[in-house]
Image (cartoon, rainbow over all chains, first blue to last red):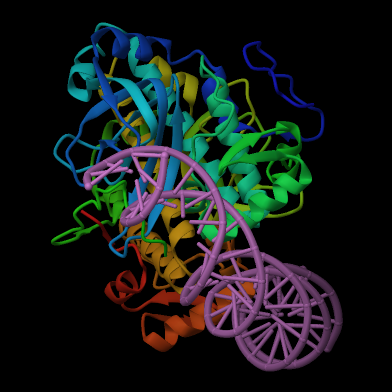
Length: 244
Length: 244
DNA sequence: CGACGATTTGAGATCTTTCAACGTTGGTGG
DNA sequence: CCACCAACGTTGAAAGATCTCAAATCGTCG
């Protein structure tokens, strides 16, 4: 009943409980092809190294990005220095600031690793809407995917304890990254980023990771996390199944 | 709170901080007028009483709802009986199951109070896209609003402690309800729903509400919550301001 | 009245954070 | 090559926040 299928289409529904993995949907579906194509062909090739931002909270951005190769964390920063990671994006993912042209972005897109991306202005994208109706459907689909991921994260934070939260997040990252052409052996996410994503302290995240390693779900090498048993991780996360 | 340096660039923190209230945006903007109009004119008038659902998790819905008068909580249910409230909707708000026609909804829309709404099928809505381009923009805008609210809630859960979380949620509900033509003196949300929305126990929420009452931000009458000082609530919520 | 759901209260158990110190890694400049 | 530094990871113990459990109260409805 595990939907581990990466490229094949295995959307088999289960009689009792269904697998949630909303996070897998975004990567497996091909619906964004029109959007991706136009960004790739008309967009500007951009490069940002680890730690830099594609855009910053407070800036007026109005752009769409397609990640060619890399990893990005969308994060919101509070006045007290706190920050909340809203979502992660890896190869083939599309992200934008989601704001009107005249209003500043309410979050930053920070590179987890050196990142190559295509950037296109939202206004020039809108101009193409008339010519290609698929484009707008793709934008819609993109937003739906983001929303479902956000709802998944919300449920993760609201309903789960530490170990489950970390397990769920790692699953999500794993699935997002499996769409990448080049697969990293380890996850390019710092423990601090994980902590900021699931609303916990880095110190505590470290403890939990130690436990997950003891369970045999992950492996750690010089602080880098490697996912060993994705199926086990999925079971450890409290959100593998929803009520019918 | 973890203070994090963004790779040397400490993101020149904020001369003056801006007010966030993303939650106010959705209700104040008039952008969804095309969408609302068509749902109101072509939709079917629906009535559901307190406790009933407009749609249920697991059902195949494929509809859009415009709430004429009432209150609805979008919630996801886990196999263990846990449930997470994802968002609240009141008068003039639009919601949908956000799924393809062939896939079941991953959450329920439960009425907090007796609710009158207009319902239109997503497919018939799509048929009108060609005739009215504003419609699709409105759908897009709706999704953006929902996403920004979800990100706001995510930040609330991830970065804030109990009292701040409750204060933020009450602010959000207050702003959502202020769009309503008929204003209730009290908030039609049970303490249990609040608990499910912010990822805490009803027992603890009760303690926090007692504190907020002591602060003079709210009042409680037979278990019903009344917002006395919305500005104070906003200050008590940790998310009134974002870093610039 | 009696049943039921929701709220309220208190105390102890559990989870999570904080603090402080130390270890590791990788880059920089002498 | 080495010393040095900054960022990140690791560890332990104490403090704090939140949950659980159990019981009492209150309101609504039949």
